[in-house]
Amino acid sequence: MKNVIKFWSLAVVVALIAGFASCKKDDDKKDPSIEGKWQLVDAALTDECNSKSYTEFASGGKYRKVNACQDPIVITDGTWKKNGSKLTIKLDNGNTQTPTIDILTEEKLVLSEATLESTITTTYKRVVE
Image (tube, rainbow, N blue to C red; front, side, top):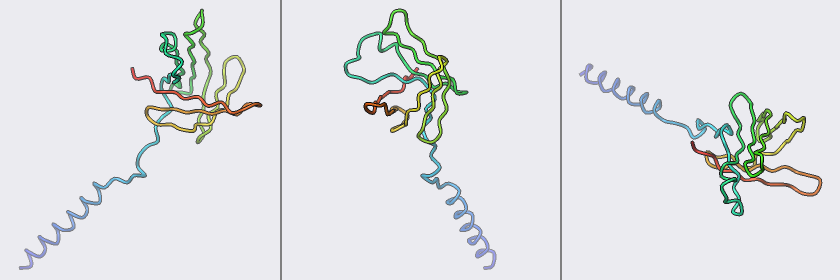
């Protein structure tokens, strides 16, 4: 009888440990990464040059914006750094941009930046390669 009780006690303990170990918390989910290529989303911009234009936040803090709608194509390089919802983009030409990340999902990025006249909001979709 003692062996049966020990067996069932051990089985219950093992089942409880396995149950707790297999539970995942919602808090364990990682925030989506801004790293990758992003294409401007705008219904008016549907031509081929816009489909070849993109903004890239590469690993290591490298930034690149490719504007294929100008002739010749304009490439702007720099660096980027994310701190919470604040983004700092330092361009190689000496300019600095500091947009706020309003939305960041695996598929969508929305940035806003205040100017003297208004706030500019820009929406991007992730480029899947």
